[in-house]
Image (cartoon, rainbow, N blue to C red):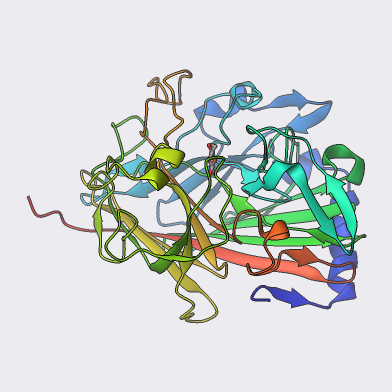
Length: 388
Ligand code: BGC
């Protein structure tokens, strides 16, 4: 099992304790450079206090978050000329996220990110049934998952924010009461680090990730098809027509899925091949090369063709879901007043492989009582001069 599972009962107890604390309004607001959109986020959802939080790194890089889904709302980074650019798609109001058709903007997805075939899996011979919310499958934890939950929040200084939430067994049907903690840290070298942790009181499955939609030219600046993307993966997991992996690991070489050298996302996206037809574009898990440095796989490098903004993703996870915004449908209005037009954002979700609970050859996603699941992903920003 590639994830670090630490048998630390003490940490597990601390986690549970943190999650059980009531949010303290004073603590939550101790750091305040909340931007002008804050009013749209302060209020109550499900009878719990929702707020907008700001973190910054002292170098001008700033991000905002809502505890509704532990979501990233905005992330401002410098472009090639030093102009601050918001590279995350999202809304101006918490209520806009509170919509059953909302496609997971900036949210943590869990307890099991991506799909579980037909909403069923077994652990030690016991079968569990989940809500079906995506065709015939369960996607991103079911109808409510953790993306529509109000998480407890704790801000530590200017650059760190921690969210905690306990998903009860009876809520979505996952075994166990699962306590999750997600810590966002904005570092001095312009990286957003995401540390995930979880404990359970019954053997369960876990696969936490973040579902940020990126547009490195800035939210609302057109499609992502000319972004350059490199994925450090020689294989991907092909899917069936319902986007469940077939179980095979297929070499990307010579296919539209070959991102081993940087190429524009749009270069091969219209190829008439069955895998791209199933995904309506890219919506696939890539098997990251396991040549970890300091415990992290270099997952991908993405560059905005207009801004020169460069994003490097590093992760402990074995997989990366590349979703090219194929279901974006011009239906909702985003922060800057533009709509969510087709492929104007993309997701790069660090993860264990989809449907792992039903696929014995995939790295396991089992979490047992007494263990603490921890995993880290880093989104590091830089910029690059563009050659025209
Ligand atoms: C999935 C897509 C899904 C999207 C929803 C992605 O993680 O892979 O199939 O449509 O989330 O926004």
